[in-house]
Structures are given as C-alpha cells and as structure tokens.
Length: 182
Ligand SMILES: Cc1cc2nc3c(=O)[nH]c(=O)nc-3n(C[C@H](O)[C@H](O)[C@H](O)COP(=O)(O)O)c2cc1C
Image 1 (cartoon, helix red, strand yellow):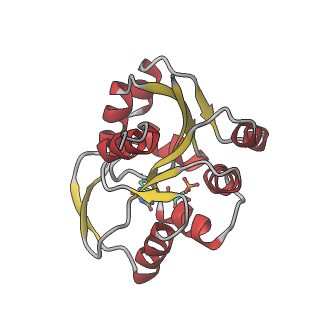
Image 2: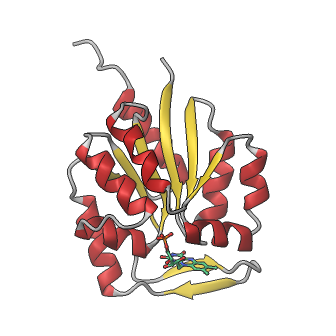
C-alpha cells in the first residue's frame, strides 16, 4: 500500500537545507509539497527552490485559495501531515488553536480529521547555531515564549515532535507499520 503525505515547509532557514535534502530522497510514499508565503521567500533566499523543483513533485504555494485544499484531510487523501521545518510563528499559532494561515489551517484540519501530525520545530533549545542565506553561522536564542509553545505542541494528542528530518520517516514508519503478531 502506498501512503500519501501532505508536507508543509514554513518560512524557516533553520534545518531547511537538511529538510530539502531528505525530501529529495523520499521514495516510500507520495509527498504533496506545500510552501507558506514565508516558506517560498525563505526557500528562494536559501537557494533551495530549484532543488525542490528538481524533485519533480508538484509544489503548492500559499495563496488566498489555499483553504480549498483543506478538503483533502477529511476526504482521506492524506495519511499524515508533516510541517517541517516549522517556524516559531506557526508553532505558536498551532498551539493556540489559531487557523489563519496555510500551515496552521492544515494543522487544525488534520487534527479534526484524526490524521497523525509530525512537526519539526526550529525553536527547541535556549541557544542554537543556525546559518544565514549566505552560509554564515549565527547564534540564535529562542525566547521563553517560543520554547513554551514548542513544549505545549509536544503534548497535543496526535502530534509527534521530531528533531531531524530523518526522524519524520522513522516516526511515520512506526505509525504505519502493521502491528507485530503476538
Ligand atoms: C531568511 C529568513 C530566515 C528565517 N528563519 C526562521 C527560522 O529559522 N525560524 C523561525 O521561527 N522564523 C524564521 N524566519 C521568520 C519567519 O519567516 C516569519 O516569522 C514568518 O512570518 C513565518 O510565517 P509562516 O510560519 O507562515 O511560514 C525567517 C525569516 C527570514 C526572512
């Protein structure tokens, strides 16, 4: 059986290159790629858009009509929703139950449809090293409020927080794997 995943890339530079690298290697399921408005801008600035396009997958960009794709969660088209990387903005909206952007709207609808959700947040520690679009290493210090919403999301039913793009595959395979016979 072939699984189908809805994958949303938000406007995060942190872990973006690693996520795209991993996305290009996925062959165990179908992936519909979605980019938020900021995701599109950041992917362009980090030089990742051409790599995404080279995957041959159709890319859906956030527009005023993105809501029309919400139907795919209740209609059973998707087996899982992945938001990776997920900005602190999207993580906070999801944790607060706000659904006014493509990523937060998909999160809410997937939750209401009982579809497993996998999130790779950018803000997971009080100090992190990241890279700018020009490749310069920088130190980033997420605020208490950013870490608070990451933590809150980790306790949402049906939501799995992952730390690396590869962990998405491990978690999804565990979720879909048939139960071992007793
Ligand atoms: C070059 C660039 C890199 C960014 N990287 C991050 C990041 O790693 N993590 C983060 O939380 N926000 C980051 N941002 C800020 C988000 O893009 C911004 O909060 C945006 O509103 C998020 O929208 P979205 O969550 O709908 O994608 C970055 C912005 C720019 C311009």
